[in-house]
Length: 537
Image 1 (cartoon, rainbow, N blue to C red):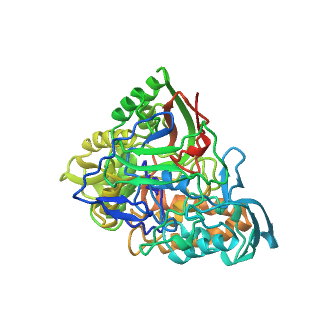
Image 2: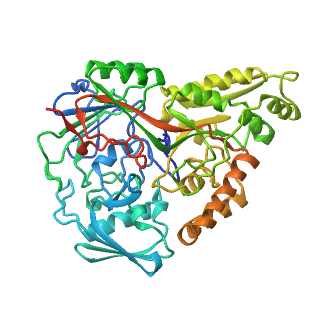
Image 3: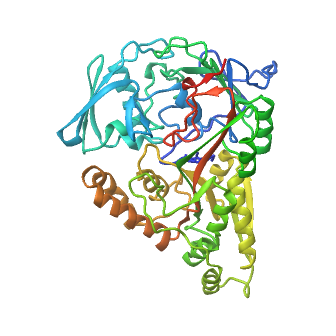
């Protein structure tokens, strides 16, 4: 949602071979931990969540949960599941290395083809079971077997051995950075396989929080509560309850923050962010991200099947004007891979050229002196940055006799339509599953028989073959891998014109002034690690 990854967008962004099972509406998470049908004879009495000394309220602009299964989850629920589950490691964006989580230390041997992790002792699952090497092995093996979401991250693994209760040994088919892979925001969760229900769902992680209530479609969709037996322990200053209060409109979220009803707004428009910086009882945070905006063109059907029209659309986007309008909330992109990751290419900044766009359209039989062209576009409801892109693009296309029929949608609805190939242009965010550029190429541009995140529907055997060679190159020759990433970006963006990449997001957050300890980690887009926060006393 990638926001669409997955983020999938504030989108995820953000993202891959996903088989996310949409949870049905009208359900309440029961005390037993599995979704239970709401009792229509007993109306819900839960009030809309409000921030207080013990409750932290997060105001996402999109529905939170699309898939509860930690093995296959691959969408917006990262903001919740990252607090319910933990992996062996967590990525530290400051050191650019993996750091201990459920594993306290690790070693590699045989040129990166053998990895041994020592596990933290005394850790309990929410189910009460003990987290040990055998339990961790079963969780990873189940995730691999499910083949959903980001399970591809474990593709290098040949065998997993629980040497003893605290030692987990991996033997790989090829060299890979398993410590980094184990820090992924998706598919790296360790969970109690014995607690998985018949629907493949579980809430038995090891994280600091567990589910309190879930009401799909309600404003306060999800609440979490402290897991009192969490291995890290608790202090009085920490938040014991978390609420996700879905607020699609940015202005509404801003008003709730000012009133003290929410603690965290993941995104404000530039004007409100500037205002937030001058508002009492509000603090702001700004940091670069690994999340970029993708404008995906339908390469399989409709007018955009013609590469000349796709190239014209790329040229119609006013990239510099958009970057200026974003006023710091986004920077002009150069290629598919954001700066800070292997595979980033400088000098691939896109250009705005309506004259050349008109020439290409004329060759395709469209343009000012030809019949009107109508194109459909979908984008994220409530995302002001995407709305700005759509506004500028619509204006530019009118000059070319193109009418853009743009529709803001909730992520689940937009994604469902995209999987049915129901639009000419699909706008979404993308970010990597772990800090590696491979995610963009495998998940968004490798051929798929049934679309998941390849929402340009691109099918190119040469590109597919190059993508398949990336893992080996990344493990053995960074220079050749970097060249391969560069060549792939040229093929996808310039030759195939499957996508335009207008900008990389700069995260601009607004929080209650009394929240202490917030730090953005671009490896986990829009995730707040609530356990790390404290409330001022």
